[in-house]
Image (cartoon, rainbow, N blue to C red):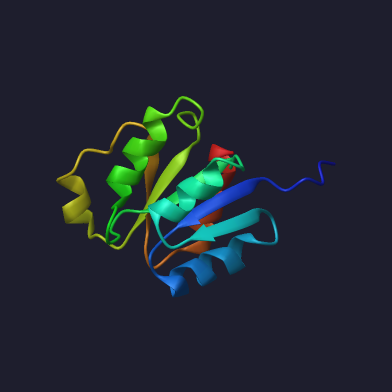
Length: 122
């Protein structure tokens, strides 16, 4: 049995969202949380996650810009990414899913759905 936990990075400007997601995942994964894309990139230089959960709507640098910066660097381009979002389905339908994103996980987070999607991605 593999005792090393996979690493997941979670980026969300809401500390309460980070706490909820981290609490849900920490038994099965090693979870690092970040309140901004800038903080993510500082650690990404040192640690490689198996997956990134990335909030779409954040101040300063939104999820689309963070994603663009992740995917343009060949060292990080193959890291699977799920967007997490509170956007309504109608808003999501009007946007194309960016290349390099596996899909959306809606807020409020449904833990069962989140765990299933993470298991499929890692």
